Image 1 (cartoon, rainbow, N blue to C red):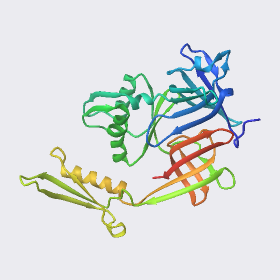
Image 2 (cartoon, rainbow, N blue to C red):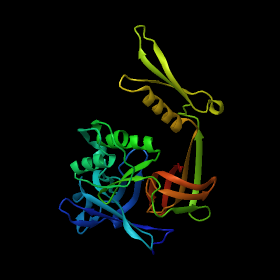
Image 3 (tube, helix red, strand yellow):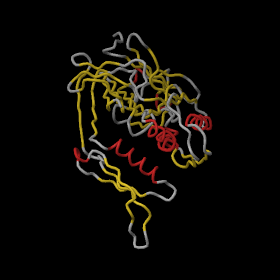
Length: 334
């Protein structure tokens, strides 16, 4: 059957530890791809039958650190959609002689590794990211905003350092969100919604189901900034920052200013908290016929159910079997 936009085809190649190429496509029982909001590494899970490929049983070929390439074809475009490593695999001889393979792209090494380094004040975000990626032997495509940082002593999980210590201050200062992801062995740090092609997900065409949710959970409408405790354990209120308490009520957060932080900076951080959390948060989900080229951080247009505008993709889950279905978690365009 020909590959089409309504029924895109997927093929999977495995490269063993010697670099020999094996086509896993005929052995595949199921395939899923995940780019979730909680981790930066893209994941692929395959279930395959333990059959012979190139005259050898797959259980004799597959090993951790084998390379995996996944390719999609919609009849017009045929490209790689995943490049990664076999991270773990299991085999059950009693259940259809089935092998389950879990793979991740190179960013799994950022998630699983820790770093201890220091950057002196005055360096740009881009140069810091270039240095770290260079130290880890990874190419970088940096298209996000860049600010000048103060001194940065960095210690901890490498993914947390990128997200929280280096890139999040840029987001707070510029108000622009970012996505950190991998494509063809290159780390991409991009503004969200920067994709050239914005795909449509439309009712009675490719949309299958939509869901929306709005919640008051985690809303903060008032921040009280406390100073240093006195001998009696009491803390003086140094400032109060309020949001829309009239509309949403008072949901108060206490923040203690440390000695190295000025009151102006503490108030700025409190204002940022109000900006981010000062109103109910909406989230959305759409299930649709798979479009293989949509990635986390992309902008999409949805016209189905009660979703009727453009959104940013925060998570992508693909289940590739007889049907090709994707589930996108979405948020409003800032």
